[in-house]
Length: 246
Image (cartoon, rainbow, N blue to C red; front, side, top):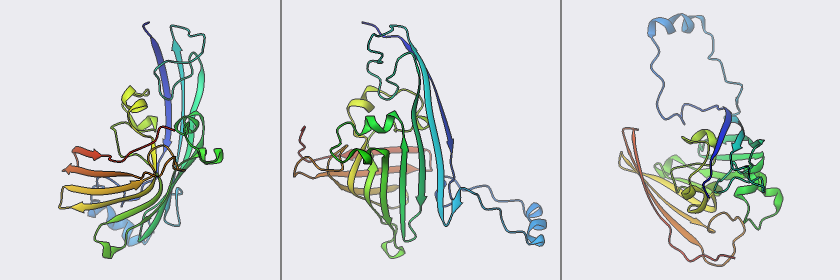
């Protein structure tokens, strides 16, 4: 049976990023223009979304769609998050707190909506934890020479698509995203620079999509990321380890 559907999604994001997290540095100010401000002695305006070194950001995501097959179940087949047919629905509302490691930091993403329940569909942890997408502590002392260690719950490194709708080219997701890769992991994640273009990493996690492990076999993920002048990105991810389908 052929499936024809149309969806319109709206994602509104309010993001506060520190200059340390920016992908590209801002252009240098014109000395002629900055001189009067410096002479006046006015301090730079601080963003209200940055408090005590912590960046706050907010995301609201909803969609309205029409499935021309008009399924009796009210479900869009083979869709990942926009599963409700012929309706207006809230996918997620989320708040993010990010404190860069200097040398200790943290990252927290929590919210509500259909997306949070879908990504935790196989989770054995208490239902209250379903409203937390990421929660980890980061360590990056200067003496570690760029090595960063994250401990907790974090989204997967696999795949080209992400959970947040505004981070994808299309509002819907591919079947590979829905069926072939994890949403998140729980465990240990590392990253470290290798020369000027490479970043290496190693992860030791419970498996995928589970905070509470479902067997005694840990999974290991090896990650290599290639960056070339900020334009080209290639990733090699290996995931050995036996897993249970329980």
